[in-house]
Length: 77
Image 1 (tube, rainbow, N blue to C red):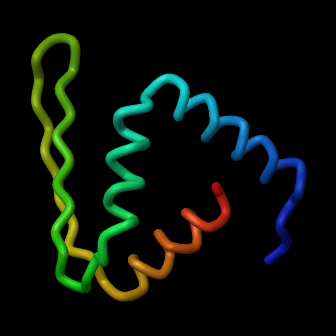
Image 2 (image 1 turned 30 degrees about the vertical axis):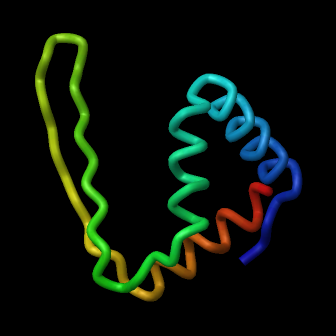
Image 3 (image 1 turned 60 degrees about the vertical axis):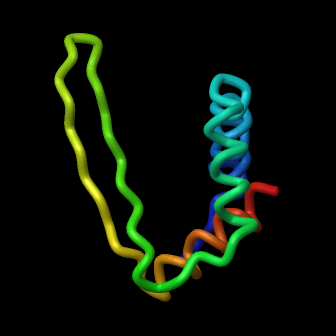
């Protein structure tokens, strides 16, 4: 797999902008990464639209999910 350095820099810029827009969420994610996420941990996400519609989904982490999250964390710091 080829990694385009320009696209990687764009991704970092987008991440930085997201962090500026949503600092509480970034702190939450950093707190999660400082804890030991284990296989079987369930992450649940709720989305509420401006019209009040609720959507909920969840996932149970696998070892490969945790490895991916750690890799992303290392790339963005």
